[in-house]
Image (tube, rainbow, N blue to C red):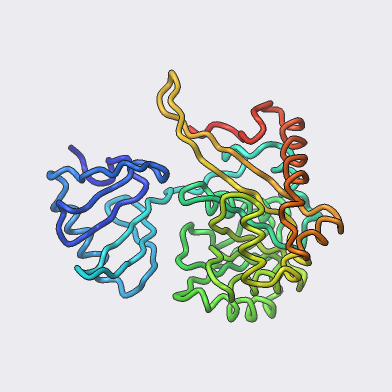
Length: 316
């Protein structure tokens, strides 16, 4: 047997006793697996490495793996939940978004407003958001600044016509401070790694209202839920004024003749007119169901892939 890096896993819980540690093969898997005994010494070395980091959330590289780690305190001591993240950021063309959705997100006229990628854990939100940032920097240009807790992909530096600068923060409440600095830095795009609380949501809406394109991620299973969560955190007036798009992602595992494949399902919602903003401002989310369905069908009809109403593509 090789090492931990050779195990197919999305998440691993690292405890004091290796026999108690469990991992999931993919994020939606409900079956947790025992780490093979031959790997327990390496697992203990990983725990020692994690214990040395004085942070609740952080990114680390260990034996060829990139891990996003959350430290949780239990009555029996700390438990580290480590999510495996990709070594290399995929290009947005390779992610599997339907063509019309990708074209809308790439549009050079999209210069201001709030774009949210939502979905469950491991659905590809961060990968897609960062891939979009890189694509727009390469093709359109400008300055991008980020506020991330923690930084997941190394984006800093020149990319085609643009430049990216990243700031890693220790607490989500620091996002507003980073935004205030960014507003004085000539930035064109602002990326918030994930919106989890009120200050991040308010910062996103404020940045969008200030003329920047804001990209972020959010845990939500559909566009309505995403709008509801941001509306409750930042106010429905704010999200109605700033929102440009919610793109909800879901990754399903499917067995094929060529082995397991991940299928991306996409549910888009673009705020295209004032009538939709009024519905959002009033918190009348049930009334936008038909708009979401219409946009989804329109995206599918225009997609060369010709896949089902929510299917974007197959990821290998």
